Image (cartoon, rainbow, N blue to C red; front, side, top):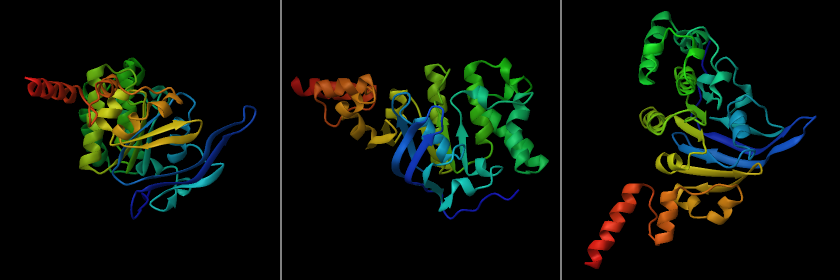
Length: 282
C-alpha cells in the first residue's frame, strides 16, 4: 500500500477540542492550539487525567476531534488511511499488552511491514535490525507474554519503530524498566531523533528523564496547556507546576535552593558549580 507523501512532518493542533461521549461525558481537551516542528524532542507532563494520553491518541488518529483539527504536513490525520498511518505517526501505548498480539516476538514486529507490503527480504532485514537495536533478538522466538513487563514495553516500541514513522509518540516509554534500561530507551529515542529527524513526543512522569533528554516540555492540566518551553523555563515555575501536581526533579530544586544561575539540569552541573564556588572561596 502506498505510504503518504507529505512535504513536511510538522504537527499542527488547531483549535482542538475533545469530549468523551456519554454515559461519562468529559471534556478532556479544551480549545488547544499547538505546533510540533519536524525533528523536535518533546516531553508532555502532567497529572493523571490532565489530557496527555488523550492528546497523544488524537495526534496518532486513534481518536477523532470533537472540534478543530490535527494535521501532519498539512494533511488531516483522520484522512490518512489507517493501514499506512503508523508509517507517518506511530503510537506506543502505555500498556504494552494493548499492542502485542502475535504468537512470537519476531512475528509481532514484522507484522507492520507485512501490512505495508514490504518485500520478504526487506521484512527480514528490517525486523532483524530493529530487534537487535532493542536487545530483543535473543527472545525472537518466544511468545510476547512470556516476556517481562520491561521487555514487552520494548517490544511495543519495536513494533512501531520498525515502520520508520516520521512522528513517534511514546506513552510512558520507561514503564517497567530499571533506571539504566530506562535511559537506554531514552538514548535510543534521542538517536532516532538526531539521525533520522524523527519527531519524538513522549508522555512521562519521569521528571529526571524529561530534564535530561527533552528539549521542549509541555505541561498539561485540565485538558489545557499550562506551560510550554525548555525544561529550565518550565521547571522554574513551581507555582504553576503545583496546579498539576508536578514537582521539578530533585537536582533542579537543589539548584533553586542554592541560588544557582543558570539552574542545573544534571548532577554533574551541580558538582561543577559547587567546586567552582569552593575554589573562589579559597
